[in-house]
Image (cartoon, rainbow, N blue to C red):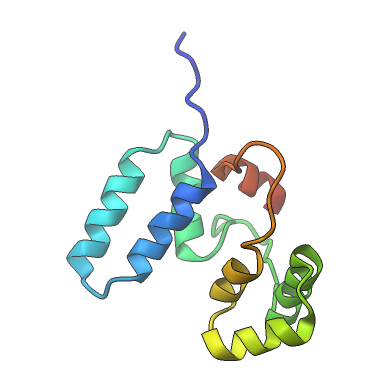
Length: 125
């Protein structure tokens, strides 16, 4: 019996998603995705594909996230310790909640091992 492969890091997923978003060239997007997806184990592959599609749950699953901007913004205020007005100004400047989160959380250090794709999926579930 073979050893189970460890789950891929969520940081690698995020870097891949950023790289895909940074190019307008379809062939380059495909190459980035092909390289990333080929390295995933059988358990992580469907999760990563769903994450890349913008929905962590399979189509047959009736659960939805129902997370709006204000919910995400509130969590960022709480986790980052940055004042709401400062984050609001940053949101206007950057125009993207993901970029706001990245900047707000730069000073925040996570204790423990880096997150894996499987752990992020478990938190959704």
